[in-house]
Image 1 (cartoon, rainbow, N blue to C red):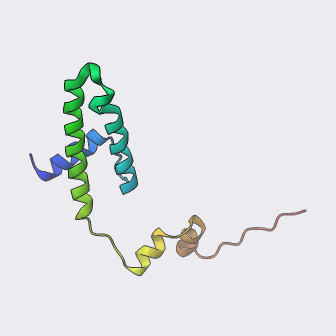
Image 2 (cartoon, helix red, strand yellow):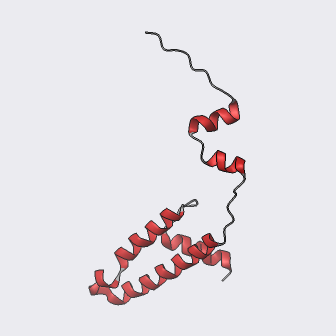
Image 3 (cartoon, one colour):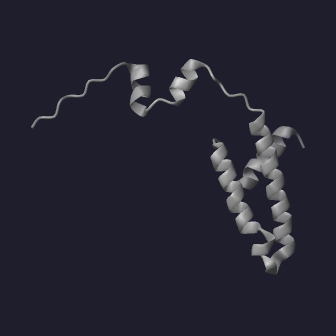
Length: 103
């Protein structure tokens, strides 16, 4: 299996959307491990152990991908990502003047 297929399989197992923050990845991992932990599933111990291993493996694969992802530290990218919706709009379309409300 190629590395992209492995990553996509891990993404699917963890239930991640097409865009996810590191916080969301960790949260999905914790929630799934809580659900599938063998101590929580004594009636189906074998399935719980298998799922726990798969979840851990998927988490490691996704974290490895994140570890090697290159983040942009260009000033314009930082400003764009940290901009409020109003600042984003103004950077693209200029200053907006809203009509004054009548009293």
